[in-house]
Image (cartoon, rainbow, N blue to C red; front, side, top):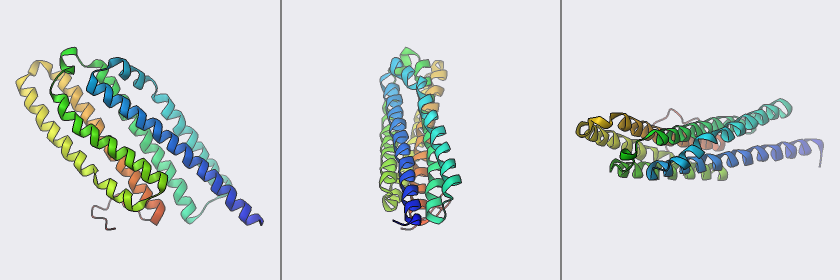
Length: 228
């Protein structure tokens, strides 16, 4: 193996190690979102408290991966496709950290909801949103693990369903609010939880778009009608 081959292999090994950390962070974030939304549906304040206080683990991984990327760029000076990989990692970990933040928000709101509100039928309306958001996040991480750009484009489209569910839920909440004004604070908390769930879909969609960027070099973040 010549010197150039050795340098290239060393870079690939380091990049793969960074990608592995991103997937570890993704798994942790996915677990936190699963836990936060489970606590919301079950009214489980103990689980919610646990989720809220462990967000620091996600933040620590973000800092570690950012440092790794900075070091990789400084030492290896990657170009073209290699550089796209590193930049995508930096962007993806930012979205993952924000998903962690949204999970922490949901968990915090759960601990503040009143006992009466936890049994509201409005929670049934959240189930569809939560199911869709979980599916998008899981699929987005899978697309990144396999660098499957074609599937990433399909997964990104699912965010439209989540947006539609969110709009339906807002209308439902307004109806409940008119009928039960005394619980306005709890209705507002539920609305913020729904908003956080919707934002998780947005961040998962971003991850899909970065997969396309790595694979093809196309930045599709602001393109509404992307063709395969």
